[in-house]
Structure formats: C-alpha cells, structure tokens
Length: 290
DNA sequence: CGATTCCCCTGATAGC
DNA sequence: TGCTATCAGGGGAATC
Image: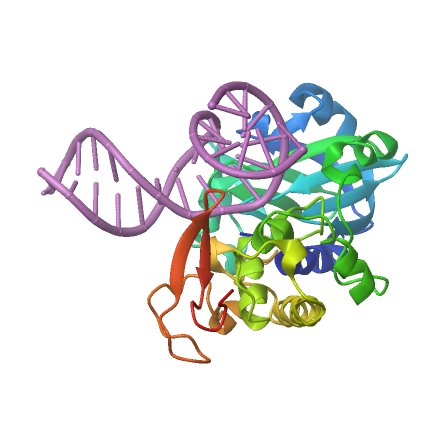
C-alpha cells in the first residue's frame, strides 16, 4: 500500500533511471487504467514525449513531459512502477531482466511505456485500482486529484503551528483526519496507525480535542515515522516493490500495523484492532488511552 | 453538513 | 479436494 515514503522512494528511483528518456510507444491489456483521455488518444499523444522531471505530490507520481504536458500516476493499493525489460508473447508479459525474473509482480503488468534506450517503465497492479491521467500541465494541476490536496508534511514550512491549525474545527477522529489527503498529504492506513502509536494518542479522539502537548507529540511523531520509513525505503505489506522489484525494509519496524493480539512494544498490552470508515485501526488500548 | 455504504478488483483465507 | 463466501483497502460517488 504505497504511502508517502513508498511513493517518494519510487520517485527518487525513477528520477535517476528515466529522466531525459523519450517514450516511444505504449502497450496495455487493461486500457481502463488510463482514465483520461481515452486510450487511443493517450496512445497517440504520449508518443515521442520526453520525460523532463518526476515529482511526488501526496501519493501521486507526477511525470513532467515536454510541451508542458503532465502524466499523473496513482498506485492506489497494489500498483508498482518497475523499470526493466519485458517482452509480450500472446499478449502475455514476460520479463527479460534477471532481477525481476520470477517475481510475482510480473504477472500483473498492465501498462508498459517503451523508452528510447531499450528500457521500459511498467505499471504492475494486482487489483487494477491504479490510475493514469494525462493532459496539459494546467489541466491536470487543476483536477481535484491535485488541486484540493493538503500540505506536504515533510516540507520545511510545515511547522507545528501550521499542523495545529488543521485541527481547529475538525470534529472527526484524529485518525480519519490524518488520512484525509485534503487535510494533509501522503499519509494512509499504515503510517496513520504508526504515527498515533508513536505519539501515544488514541485514534478515536476528535482532532480538535487534542491539547497543545498532544499536538506537539503528534507533529514530532509524524516527522519521525515518515522520515524513518523513507530511510528504509518504505514498507512492503501488500507486496509493495520499488522500481527494481525490491521490497522496502520498514516492515520490521512496524509497531502496531497488522500486530493484532501481539504485545505492545512499550507496555506488553495486546494490540487491538477495530474498524473506522471501513479501514483497520490498530492501537494499544493502554498507551493510546483517551 | 457529516457519516455510512458501495464500488472498483483479485489473492488469501475460512467454512463446509 | 474443491467449492463458495468473505474480506482488505485508496479514493470517489452515492446514499442515508
């Protein structure tokens, strides 16, 4: 489940590997992954475009192309961007590079960009939830996908004051607020659980009820958890892979996520699991008491 | 207005 | 063994 640290890892890898390349052609067996424009138009217009830069905004990967065009890729739950070489036989994808040979991730490649150096950029996605949007930079930037996003938590101007201001009139539970991309960008289910545990805050507490000390703890935990996950190249539950098909290493650092009925690392109380908005909440009922 | 439910999709798991 | 039912989960849409 790629969140900020995983998406940033992919973006950093892609920057090293494919900036400056041209896209010669594309292949897909699942054209609906491209949400706009229609696939035929996309196929025509992306041809011979040059990759000028690659950025991250929230959980979106933004690929700047020449002539002021923008390619947006959202990996959703199980999307992976891989750089390597494949061949298509009977509309089946087969890997040609050692590192990726035998990896399950090859079985779910649904979109391939052929680059001008013989390499390819492939979008693998077991669930087919990932989406690709292409258009003029102006058009894409004004979509709700990008326009309504909250601030980036790892930038310098994301101060404690700014963080605190997000909660003033926020009656929803703090966990929901942390995961709302239009409040704050890039945090999903794994890291919201981890951040709240690190800050010793109950996920069910209303955001506006946090006192100044709790807000500060949360702010510090947020930076610490996300930065550490970034250093470990992300978490590989749900089979997250980087652009070489390699897993992240933060999984071994997880304190609560998917640790139901296992002892809390601070107090040995068994970790609980509950539901919130259809998502799993993991927390220590003792450390993270209201 | 907020809260809940459904939907997209498919591998894993449980129940029979 | 092998079938069927259920579930996870980001994010958007529909509904309560």
